Amino acid sequence: MKSFLRLFLAIVAGAAGGSIVNLGLIIVGSEIIPAPAGVDVTDPDSISAAADLFGPQHFIFPFVAHAGGTLAGCLIACLVAVRQPRMAALPVGCLFLLGGIANAFMIPAPVWFLVLDLGLAYIPMALLALWIHQRLLTEARSSQ
Image (cartoon, rainbow, N blue to C red; front, side, top):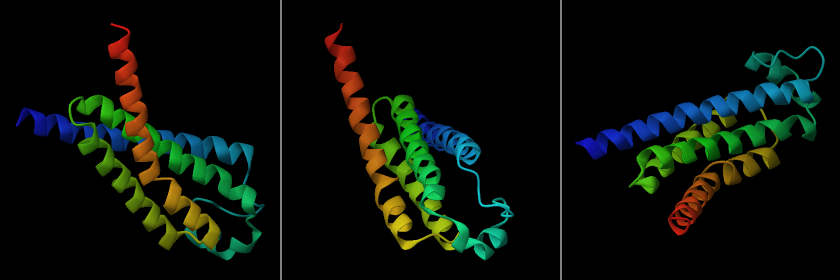
């Protein structure tokens, strides 16, 4: 039961931490590359009405936020789970992927962005987090 509880907490902590990183990157990105004039990015209808005003530059930070949030969340999950990093990181990556799929249905975006985002920002970032976690463990063991 204790290992299940730790795994559950790792997934929750990873999802929460990754969401905070995602939101932070979106906020920073909107300051660096603002939305087109007259578009309220908090209103999906406003975004839909002005979809043709968004250029490729407007999709940089959403991708970075999705990938960065997933990577951070999966790393957090790995660190909290300790003995079961895969069992923590992959569900977090899948949760973020489900969020990305939901976004794809709710917010209009070009096909190239959807392919890039859904293909590279979620599961590959979960796998990268596992690789980074393994490297950190290897370095920690070799320095002892």
